[in-house]
Image (tube, rainbow, N blue to C red):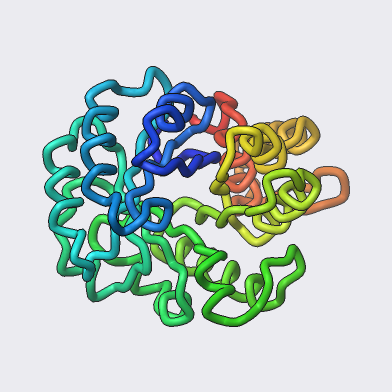
Length: 279
C-alpha cells in the first residue's frame, strides 16, 4: 500500500531485531523503522546495521518508512547513506522536526513524511506541505506537547489548533489527510479510540501506533462506517442521475447534493475500497 493512502502506521525501534520482525509481519499499512527517538545515542550505528539487514527482506504486505535523525544532526549523513543503499526497500522517509527550508535543501530520493512536532513547524505547516518531495504531514504530539508544556489529552485545545492547521495545510497543498500522533498509553484502548475519532473529525486520515494491539482500533475508527459507505453510494448514484439529466444539484433525504458533495462521497467510497470511489 502506498504511504499516501495508508491509514495505520506502526513505530518500531530500528535496533530491535525481534520487534522489527514482528512489525514486518504485522497488519500495519506502514511500518516506521525508527532511527531517531527510540534509539539511544550510543546505539545509532548498530541500529543502522540491524535495519540494513532487515531491509534486505521486504515486507510481504504493507509499506516501510524510515524515520531518520534530524537533518541537522550528526547522524544524518549515515542515515541518508543507509537510505540510498536500500532505496528499493523503502517507500518513504520520515523527517523529524520538519522545517520548510531544510526540506527544500534536502535530496532524499523517496517520498517524505514531514513530522511536524514543534510550534515553529505548526506555524510553518503550509510551507512544509508544499516543500519538494513531501507526500504527507504527521503531527508529532509528544514533542509538541512537551515544548508547549501541556498534557496529551483528547480535548486539548492546543492540539485541536495544531490539527486544524495541518489539515488545512495538507488540503491546500493537495496532500492526503495528515497522520495523527501516537497515543502513548498502550493499555488505554478507550483513549486511543477517542483520540482517533477526534483526529478523523479534524480531517486526519491516518494515525501512528506504538504497539501492534493499537492497529485494529485505529483501523476501525478511521475507516468509513457501513452507514457512511451506504450513504456515499446513494449520493454518488443520485448525483450521477442528476448530472446525466443536466441538473447541477438534487435533493436526497432532504439535503442538497451537488458536485462537492458528490466528490466527497467518492472519496469515502475510495477510502472504503469501493469501485465507485475509484471511478
